[in-house]
Length: 119
Image 1: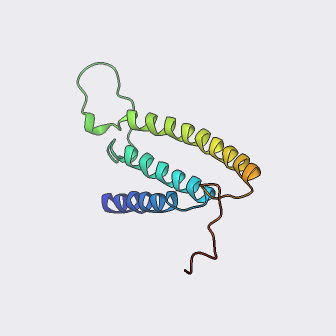
Image 2 (image 1 turned 90 degrees about the vertical axis):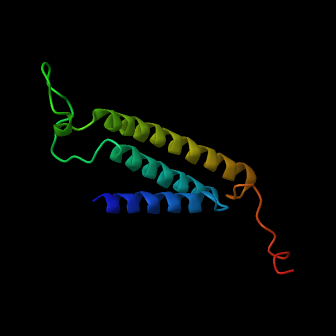
Image 3 (image 1 turned 45 degrees about the vertical axis):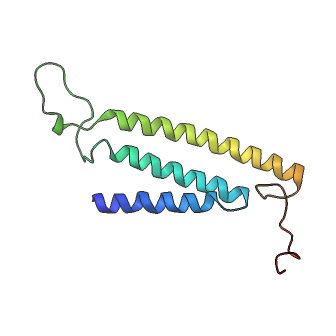
């Protein structure tokens, strides 16, 4: 299970970095989303992979911590999901305004010159 999870995190991070380096703003936004998914899965996996275990320990006495899931990564990932949703919405609004003002969706605001590429 850990190898599959590690591979998924690696593929998401690599795809996100590749898309962030693209010249169009929509590809940059999608790349940032993929990077945030990779980080969320990484944080979630750091809290031990447990299935069907409660996240809250009962009061009193000694308890075996291995029988419970760690609630902190779950809370961090939930918070990160909300923040990434708001950030993505902000990026999309800025992207739409930038396209309306410049007339292009390139990150630097200008289309590459097709005539000088072959020279």
